[in-house]
Amino acid sequence: MPNQEARLDRLFKALADPTRRAVVARLCRGPAAVAELARPFDMALPSFLQHLSVLKACELIESQKSGRVRMVRLRPKALRQAESWIAQQRDQWERRLDQFDDYVKSLKPKDDES
Image 1 (cartoon, rainbow, N blue to C red):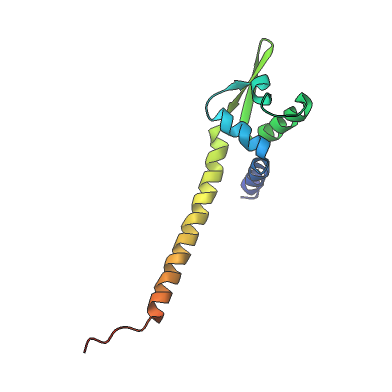
Image 2: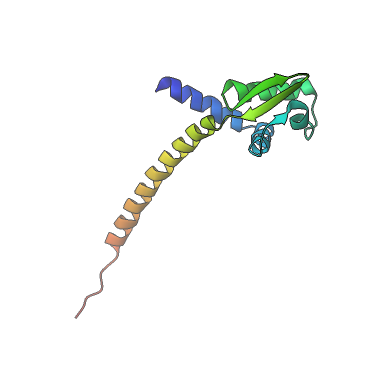
């Protein structure tokens, strides 16, 4: 579990940055060349490549060079890990809220049927 938690920490840290989230959102539509991915951002290419490096380190993306073009694609498996963790948290909070709702209902005075 500690290894899985560390992986999840790296994933959420990577997704905390708006540039990296935008890259992931773009890659959801399909693979893209590094130059295409970098175009919308007002930063030097080496700075943008650091963002890609973070995404690659947490296994969110993979890249492959074809001739002079480096193509980048999304690896959805990493996103599924985050989705699973979020679903577990949601289930836990829904159970807690249901218990709280039951408790609040038990505090209400019941109408006498006289």
